[in-house]
Amino acid sequence: CLTPELLHQYSLDNKIAVIVDILRATSCMVTGLAHGVKEIVPVSTLEECLALQSQGYLAAAERDGSRAEGFDMGNSPFEYMKERVVGKKVAVTTTNGTLTLNKSLDAKEILIGAFLNIAALTEYLKLQEEDIIIVCAGWKGKFNLEDTLFAGALCHALKNDFEFACDAPLAAEAMYLTAKNDMASYMKNSAHAKRLGKLNVIDDIEFCIQESIYDVIPVLYGESLVPLRQ
Ligand code: MLT
Image (tube, rainbow, N blue to C red; front, side, top):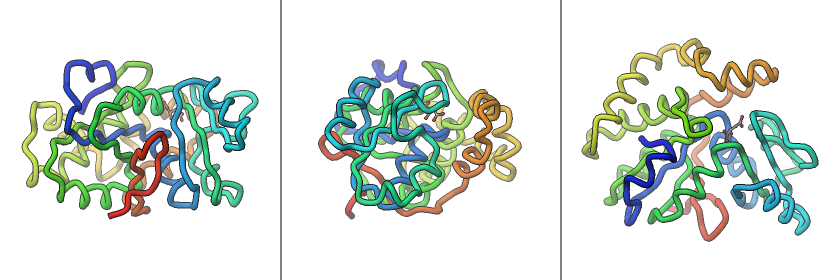
């Protein structure tokens, strides 16, 4: 359970990295692939996203919670459910989530985690031998509530199959067990939930905290996220 800034303290070699940005990048990636997006290319800059748009990709860009000017989509999971995305290649850049993914490229395997696919992700991870690092996107280098809640939920689900390498999973698990019976109320304290509230996207928060509504596990294959084939 790390934020990107701590990644340099750990080697990702031969490890599985689970990237999480509950509000909303990884929730969008899971939703998009579940609703027929062909592949998703996560890029770190607006310029890279525009370049792929010129090659025919649907371009999704968010900065500080809002859709960036001049792009086809923002970063709401509801945009990834529309007919227009079916069969399409999507290039995406977000404030934290895509940056975090691109800082984790040394990992043996990069998977996308969200509450939306947590059961499928758990079952897959239980069968793996490699160490797992949960990389929480946070907000601009800072800890955030929602990503750590997810990390706690995943650690709780995997605790009988893996050993915790430090106390962070224990803390995250304790936080999740405190919050799990009323996540919506607990999430109201999150800085990003308040930020999104001001942008009138409360529905996104309620959608992104639902557990296990999709079975798809996005995996990075080359530069693209595609559904994991098991
Ligand atoms: C992020 O990358 O920090 C989030 O996805 C931002 C958002 O979608 O509001």
